[in-house]
Amino acid sequence: MTGEASRITIETPIAFGDRLPEQVDAVIIGGGVIGVFSALYLARMGKRVLVCEKGRIAGEQSSRNWGWIRQHGRDAAELPIMMQALRLWREVDAETAGQCGVVASGTHYLASSAPEMAAIESWLPIAREHGLGTKLLSGREVSDLFAGEADYPWVGGTCTPDDARGEPWVAVPAVARLAQAAGASIREDCAVRALDLAAGQIQGVVTEHGRVACEQVVLAGGAWSSLFARRHGIDIPQLSVRATVARTAPMGDFFADKAVDEQFALRRRIDGGYTLALADRHGFHPGPDAFRHFRAFFPLLRLNWKHVRPGGLAPAGFPDGWGTPRNWAEDRESPFERARVLEPPPDGAYLRLMADRFAERFPKLGRPEIADAWAGMIDAMPDVVPIVDRVSAIAGLVVATGMSGHGFGIGPGFGRIVARMVAGQDAEHDLSRFRYARFSDGSPLDIGPGL
Ligand SMILES: Cc1cc2nc3c(=O)[nH]c(=O)nc-3n(C[C@H](O)[C@H](O)[C@H](O)COP(=O)(O)OP(=O)(O)OC[C@H]3O[C@@H](n4cnc5c(N)ncnc54)[C@H](O)[C@@H]3O)c2cc1C
Image 1: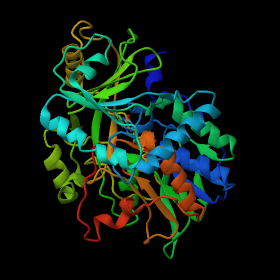
Image 2: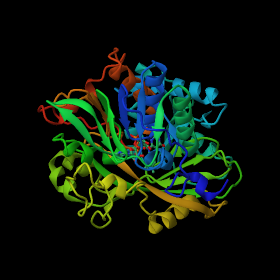
Image 3: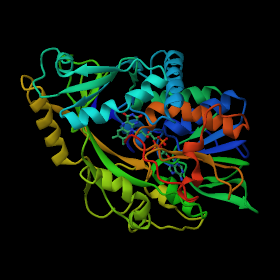
Image 4: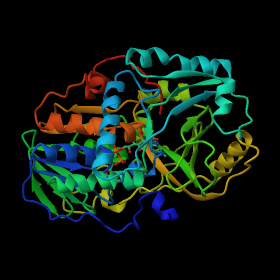
């Protein structure tokens, strides 16, 4: 497998070029994991659906992530949706003859100190309440996970053995092909510039290739959702952080699952390497929204201030860039076309630290050969759980965004929910935690378990 195969970039050839229909039941803005699963389930309900993707399907977060499909450590309100999502991932993997790379893979949270152990243990009552087989591990059991390669002072850990992992850069396009086969139209290089509104009701969308009539729109634009919504007077408090990831060259299979401690994360890949990342370093590039939303994010920043490293002002082309227009004409190029695929560079210092931390934990293996590296912008909400809701100010608009660093695993679950909302069916889950109004109705901020 080549380096390029680790994620989708602007160099990836266009694979979805359906003709724009004149009219559909719903337009989905964004071809990430949320958009494509919403399209799949809507198409299977017999709805006419169009996915507009400004760049490439899964070009942004949805191909750049670690591929963890985890129930472990989830917010209590997300867990039932995630348990269903895991079943749905297995289903689509079977339907695509294994193209999603979904395999059983335990999730391990490891602790190097007693306070950290207490913090990860505090989630166990949620696991028990939902019948998950999550286990406590002693320090010795943790060391035994790594085929004799580990030499590190972990004091213990927690593990959910029946979690899974997938290969994001192949999985999400495979699901998009399933959606197409079910009747969805999908068009890459097709930015939606604006909603077409009449008296507060959606009449259609204006894309860079023309207008499409519809009464419902799903905003699943990841890191761009806030910029898009604000042009229509909808305020979404959402900020992005830059996360750097590395892929090692193929190496011996000393650990088949996925694990994270306070500083370092790794998982086995289907190509025989490991995906590595830092758990305590996220680059942050403040733009105007960072100042506007400072109060909303202050409690989260206070909890995570050590993890968020200012990395200079948001450059041009970022959703919250200083030069990024906040308003634009529908008949002119919009900021979405100017940044078809948001591809922030990986942080070189973080890559060196990753290799050091690998060697610290697995000294006999030493520093691994880094075969490829990239970064992605994680769209975070102030309470680290998404918005999945209708927005009352615009009839016909469903917002599904702000997956806060854990949307790949839960993607099928929220996609199914979005499809049911659009189709006017019961969502079958309690969605009150994900309501849009929670940031403006005086509700206290309830920060979820983490990115
Ligand atoms: C480094 C990293 C590691 C992660 N690890 C994990 C993990 O292990 N497990 C997990 O569950 N999650 C993980 N995540 C989070 C996960 O990747 C995201 O939550 C998820 O992919 C978000 O999906 P999405 O569809 O909401 O957004 P995205 O994947 O960002 O897709 C949004 C799409 O909308 C398009 N778009 C935006 N505006 C417009 C417009 N106006 N017109 C047309 N198209 C538009 C964009 O081009 C983009 O392709 C990780 C994320 C990163 C960056």
